[in-house]
Length: 47
Image (cartoon, rainbow, N blue to C red):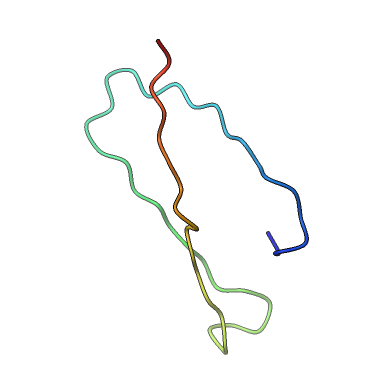
């Protein structure tokens, strides 16, 4: 994602999950000047 792109929502079924790992992989140029910012990501429980 880039700053100019709209918000993305991911609906995940995490029933029974004990842990959640957020992973970032290398960009096109390997690990040169890459950044990862989760931008205050939230997990919201469905009522």
